[in-house]
Image (cartoon, rainbow, N blue to C red):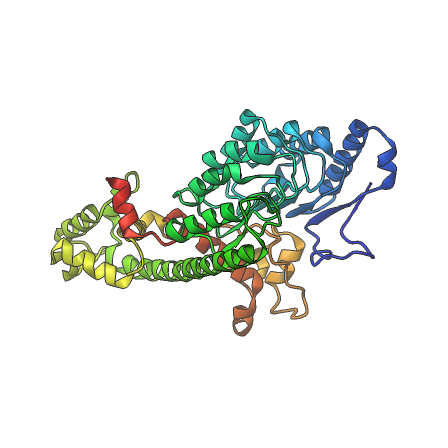
Length: 460
């Protein structure tokens, strides 16, 4: 097996990315035992990682790793020698590697509390239907910041996996979930409906096509999304499976056209409301910083604040005479009900709880950027990898290549060193801004629309 960045026959858009390690399967490994092949594969991958200055993407699908190689690889990544790679790895592709229960446990250990990895592909692997193994995987997934999980073309998963996986899934940063061609049937439709209609579902995209959900089953999911889901805007439920529940050809066509219309309308509704909520949350943050920010707000950080506590602390600080802290405006002399109405006008599509979370965040001075954060000018970027230094110094070399979008870990602070006129076109800067913004929106729960009536019903 050879590991290299590119292939002359089949090229990918990130072939020239120096932070990518790809595998090309070698036919000779098929003539040795599976255990030996997995050991050789893992050693070669580890060797390739050690030769890189930094690794953001591991594309090691179809590399004959198996369970043993998977365990060996992740043991290395958890070791001091591989920790640098673990702290920079954002994309991991393990497609068709014969990974079973033992390998899935190794993956679970790797993603547990991992705030760097964004994409994980386990497609084409048998994995496991053992409830305990799935439970450990789901718990680890919930603690991570994984955005994309692909489990497609895993025919051995079936209904047992879905029954153990979805009821425990509560990954607040997960945005894409692929379950296509996993041999699930209409038996698990209530489980899928329970998940997509719960507050645990923050997905943008869900793939469940190429299964045996049947047309009536797909319609049940569509109707549930229309009624109670406000996050999904891309859903694929296409199903070629035909049985007695589906009716004749013309009935199936009409039924699917009607289902597609309902799903499309719900998806457009969700997408539009997401855009409104995110935009208004950012606007509210801007005004709340100027209006509510006081040093006394530190007392709110440990609990669940309400508007009364935020307003009361601002009103209390009005009597404090200080040269450093300006007194609150007359806004805080208004009744709390009127204050809340004014705040609601600034962000009308946010729920009351969402507005309070944004205000509480803005009122806590500890959430401000640290004054000591470094400014990454070309003169002090020696600690960055070479290809990122090239991107930071483009004002002196306008022909330098832009770092590949999606192949780097956004730091807590990063400043673009492009000339002022070209900064608006810097893809690296845009990705950093988008990443930090999305993390904040998820933190304050303003990544989806929350209907007020649903919040009131949940409290009753």
